[in-house]
Length: 399
Image (cartoon, rainbow, N blue to C red; front, side, top):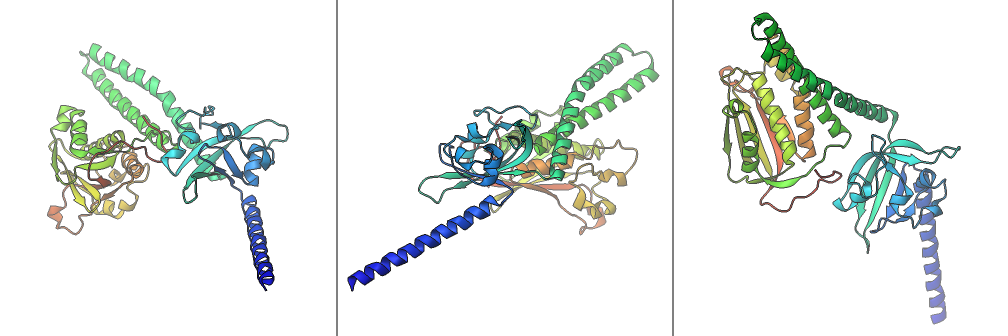
């Protein structure tokens, strides 16, 4: 009788092994049939498993050639500018895995060309930590960007290169105009034309700076440093960097409870710069700006209010598009004002997203007409009760 029980137990174990082998085989078929290259790395970033797409990409279709190989030697990674990334470069995936899950767009060298030549493909990298096993692993997924994504990314890279090339001649032009205006003081007509040219040159320079910033955000070139920051200190640092005539028009009203928030200081400064420029652009010289902050559960709310004309009924109807690029709500306002670039609020929106927050317009349409003066934008940021060591934002570098 015990012999029969032993045979039954062995039979059950064999059935379980057969089912496990079948399941693993089906999983292998499923992973090999995907269009995404998938690799599993150990803590030393050595490749422990790879699907067929990864083998096609990196080892001429032979999976065995990848196993046991360091990732840095198996796949050459290039920046979006086509520069080979050494393994110790900040943008290299190997330097980013320890920060947690992340994504990056890079050029990947592949050997699919039958002639043996290596080509580069725009790819999206995604990595995910596997922590529920005895030792940690990283799942790396490499996905080719679809034609639309590739076209958009190439367009953004082109805009970045164009903006970079325009910076130097614009700086020379601005400097030349300033020198001419100092020399020509006797002819008021010529001087007036020079002032107009200087103003337009400054406006184009500002547009180029905004395009370069958006391009950095689009292509992952903006270096994020998210840290728990004392808000009062960040506001004061920003206020003291402003020209005196601008700083004099700002008042602060901060709730002492919201002492710290998780921000990137440079991104936060840029957000405040854009909001202030936007407010002053639509206001007269006597208009003021009030910045207040309060705590709502685990979120810091920052209210940016001005005493300008506020939003018209037509603009209120178009608020759903206010944070889109090149959207100019002032087209509904006086044509006597110089046009903005339509990029300022789009920059604010993307910088806030990068810091894990968001921005929205506070609607005042329910108030009486005489109380609708001024506009108010609300910034929401993750609250932090106390300061600690700065931490990198997942998937970003450091400044």
